[in-house]
Image (cartoon, rainbow, N blue to C red; front, top):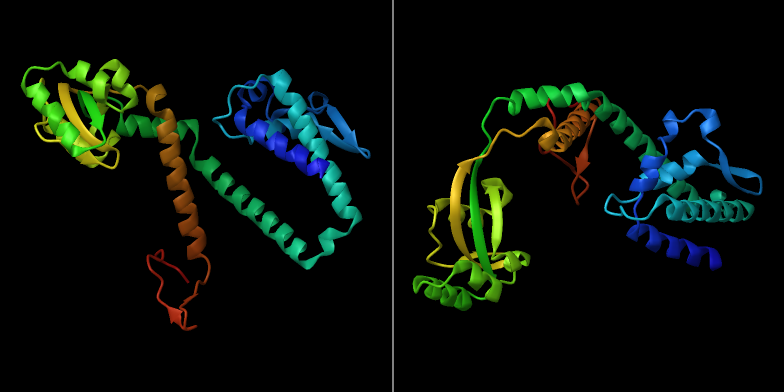
Amino acid sequence: MRQLSTLSALALALALAAPAAFAQSAPAPAAAPADANPVVATVNGIKIHMSDIQADAQSLPPEAQQLPADQLMPLLVNQEVDRKALLIAAQKEGLEKDPGVAARMQAAANVALENAYVQKAVAADVTNTAVQAYYDQHYAGKPGPEQVDARQILVSSEAQAKSIIAQLSKGANFANLAKKYSIDPGAKNGGELGWFSKDEMVPAFANAAFALKKGEYTKTPVHTQFGWHVILCEGHRTAPTPTLADVQEQIRQKLTDDAIQKTLDRVRSQVKIQVFGKDGKPVPQIGAPAGSK
């Protein structure tokens, strides 16, 4: 029970902490030479290397970005020690021979192999050269999207939104009303949203905002899943061409998504697939890649 409690506490701590400082302070395991991969602990003679700790740090969620390396290191080392101790205990009991455990172990191994295959395929397509080529084709020398600069007042009822619009029609200041009534986090800034393109907002909000001229506000409340909006347009512009640095992560994600889909299409086309209905009879495949066997 102590080991499981320790793991639970560590999991909570690591979920709230970040690997960034630690991960940046040490190279990736594959890049580390042998003399830069020291043993940091042993459990019954089983060695835990720095590369194991680095891999753990890199696998932590990206939002956990604040724990300093000198605090994260002991947590990760202790986590690896607990894992090794649990593994030794499980092996002593021969749990790997239990059919259910063996099946789960095999399933985990299969997932690791599948992921390795996809990662290899993605790595071949998502290179710096590919990112630059995509940028040159889709962004370089081209104007950015149309954007609107707007403010909003977000309230929870249509009646309150109509009341606010009535106050605006009598000359009330939009920013002051936003500070007083809006439940949006931007209320403290007078409801300021800044510049945004149409695809950055939910459709109902975007359509209303882009239909306004500079200085106009919505004369009827705009309803979305967030509540009831009153929107003020403060200007239109064509966004400047983004730099590569501005969009490279977006491009990488796009190329990654495309590479994964291409990989799935290829491997599905190389195998024979048959799907069965509840009655046990074969059913036609929907959206099967061309050339499926």
